Image (cartoon, rainbow, N blue to C red):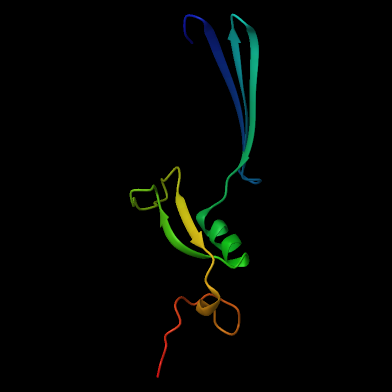
Length: 103
């Protein structure tokens, strides 16, 4: 609430579907403004699985860009993936990291 508007928010959380639906309504001098949103959250393990299925490998995983550790209480996380170069892939087609060259 401020001098020129009042905002009201309603949220529905569906843990089984891993979704959050919310609607912000702003009552202002110019009338009503509706700001709906629908998001689905995923767990880090789900994101890792999707990345592996897409042929990517994880190179960073943290609570934030500064290297914070992900804990059960973390609200957000950052994961960075990369596509391995062809010479970094074994014969089965899975990423195993850099291939060691032996003479």
